[in-house]
Image (cartoon, rainbow, N blue to C red; front, side, top):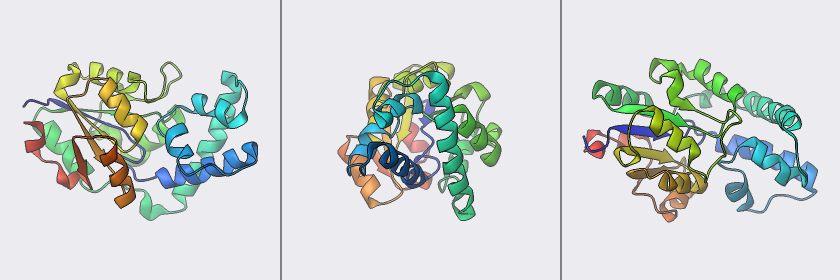
Length: 224
């Protein structure tokens, strides 16, 4: 195989939930900014960035780590409650599990590189039983030590933990900043995914190698 590993973003990529994050962040931001977020503001200021990077933009001042953690826990608890209130949405994107198993059966390494924080990541691991497929060290998240996207750190770290060079890896993303991060990390191929036509048009415009609707679109041929 030319491509011996695949790294997934999580929110909006393995779980179609970005509309829920957007609902919560827009409400929080409007309360502090005194105005609604502009149409493109959420995508370019919030998506892919760590919460510690977002809060100063929302509050208009520097925020220490303790305050950022407290505010982030409140925001993420609201998001999780919203997700749990729609149980039909608590499912990985169609074909994801089959792709995980296809990769592992063919010695293709898999990892996650997400700007989500530890509380949400623990929730995802428990809810979706991610350790059935992903080694604990191959789930890279915002642990407070690395910047969010478009910085390549999350993807570069995930690729390094797989023991591969970037050119051997495929990255799947749903966000513009995430696509930029994957390119900056040197990924061999970058795929875009979207939950609707608008999302797929967005990633196509960002210059991905391929746009997919679900993971049923991905086969072993994509790794050759």
